[in-house]
Length: 168
Image 1 (cartoon, rainbow, N blue to C red):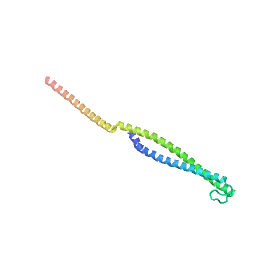
Image 2 (cartoon, one colour):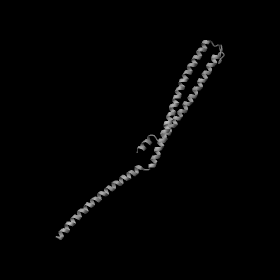
Image 3 (cartoon, one colour):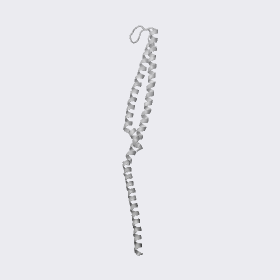
Image 4 (tube, rainbow, N blue to C red):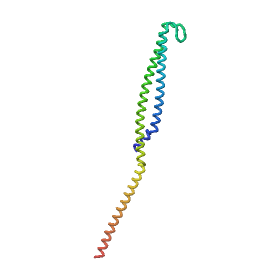
């Protein structure tokens, strides 16, 4: 009965659904991580181009002062810093989801083992109820036989008394 309760709470089907959800989340996080890495590389490349230019913007060929160039580089670096923080968060999320999937796989194996064990038991509840019924039936039969035995003893005593009276 305890095994059945555990299986109802965490059946292999439910655990598989959770694993699927986690794997979808894992794929999303990996995609997010890839985008962040790509974004960082693009921004770093833009900064490098800006640092290499003299007086013209490499993107629009407009005049570019040192002050303007430094301001753009500073803004780009701030974007890189935010992307790196987001990347670190994504990496932590990937690690956590990976651990969750591992734990769910362990739980899945345990649930499958319990399910197999439960199936191997057959109809234990039905067998138990049937046995309880048979025990009660036998107890009633024993009680009836005991009563019959007492009645036979009484009848035997009465017959002995009558026989003794007849002899005397």
